[in-house]
Length: 261
Image 1: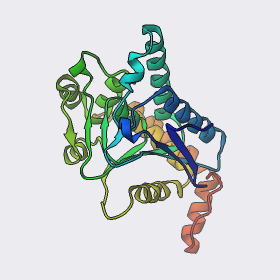
Image 2: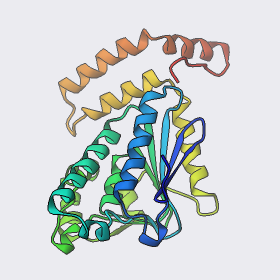
Image 3: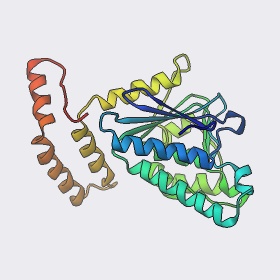
């Protein structure tokens, strides 16, 4: 699949999905959703390629949200279908077993922030702003944002951002936990994203998936259900071939070669 709206680059260790609509601040069209779906399909079918990096073209925007020009040309029924499709893809990305990183090269507003929040991690240049501003035009976040933002930053901070529609800068986003790292401007953002991804995917996929599953059920107060899930995974992961290889490599003072990559 080819499009002027996006590019997909296979870097062997990961796919890079680049939205290529800088003149429209990389706003989301149906074509962009096609590209995102292609990436998710490919990664779910290819066990050798374990990661996805999403980035926007240009210097102004990662993604400014849904394309309002396209929206205005659509019927109410088609608008609803696009929202449903985008929400389904974003939830699918959020729940995927592969690691995904949103590399925020510019503002992430509306659906763009929702796309970023669906990723496992988010890194951002210092000048980046983030916002769910839909309330300012009489709308609400449509792509799972009302659920993702509270889960990441907490209900009080999320409600403040969504009710006011205000943007937050990279420092506040880092403080909130909305982004994981502020990047170094002197090093290309994509290079930093690839380094971050490889620092994760070099580890055992069995262990990574178990950690993510345990973290998913964690609550602010230590709960018995979460502790039991951790206990079950400790036993299961400990019996895996990756665990045996990891312990052997540690004893032999060599790099581990995991089978589940």
